[in-house]
Length: 308
Ligand SMILES: Cc1cc2nc3c(=O)[nH]c(=O)nc-3n(C[C@H](O)[C@H](O)[C@H](O)COP(=O)(O)OP(=O)(O)OC[C@H]3O[C@@H](n4cnc5c(N)ncnc54)[C@H](O)[C@@H]3O)c2cc1C
Image (tube, rainbow, N blue to C red; front, side):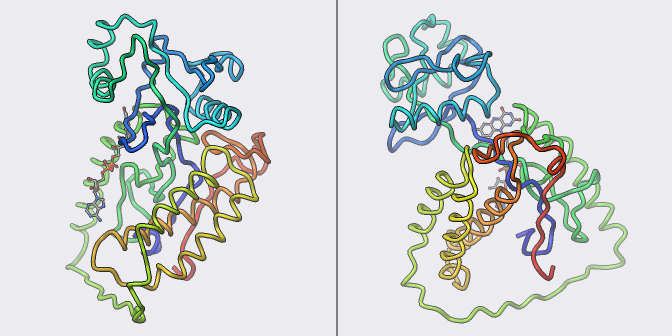
């Protein structure tokens, strides 16, 4: 919505992945906290082999993006949809006391941590990029303020550290509220602008938005996921543009359809920004440009709607 209103978006290629989400077909993707690896849990591939030592000297304690990429690599090499988190050496009563939520989740799926390993895989977790704001939480659109995950403050660099999002929300939430109040107080009176958008009638029944959304999810995971490369990013843009031709001119009765339109818009922007950043930095990893390129890319990528 902010993009449509003419706001500048920034760092849209910076999507953080969480390495360990519960992977059980049909079950919701509960997060399996990284604190478990801090306590000594091991990652094993589908053949039972512990693999993190091979990928990073800190093994299981390597940064999030490194662990996510290592898991993905093991999944590809073993042809499996997931890896495992091994807690079998844990003291079970201590585990239940220290991690009651995870203990409950495991029990609900009949996973006995003394004998079973927890199936996990990475998943999209946190959007570092978003609507560009200044230190007063102002966007470039007069009267539009942003804070929280939707905003791009620059505080997280290219790789957010755990827990900083809630702090950011607290700090910038307060600032945004104050700035909005000040802006209102300065206004002489309410200014309303009526907007009319003409959408040509089209045949709604031919569009299965649920199908578009599922396909979009799969496409983003495959082509704009943890490891990216030019060929896949270009293909993603092409496919999204094709879907947009069928979705963007429709009028929907339920939010689901509008949300699908927004998802297509955001996805295209992410794919475009990821294609533009021909280097690897933080959460953005390009297999065709695996090195960091400060000379060309120690900067943000900004996007704004045409004719905004
Ligand atoms: C599983 C998980 C664990 C996490 N753990 C941590 C952690 O330990 N520490 C940490 O710092 N961060 C953590 N994060 C990240 C952090 O939780 C989020 O970044 C943060 O909650 C974002 O807050 P927000 O208020 O910006 O957005 P949200 O919490 O997403 O709030 C946005 C709100 O807007 C509402 N909304 C959306 N569209 C509309 C609309 N059109 N009209 C009206 N309302 C609308 C939504 O319903 C929602 O209530 C975690 C994230 C996940 C997914």
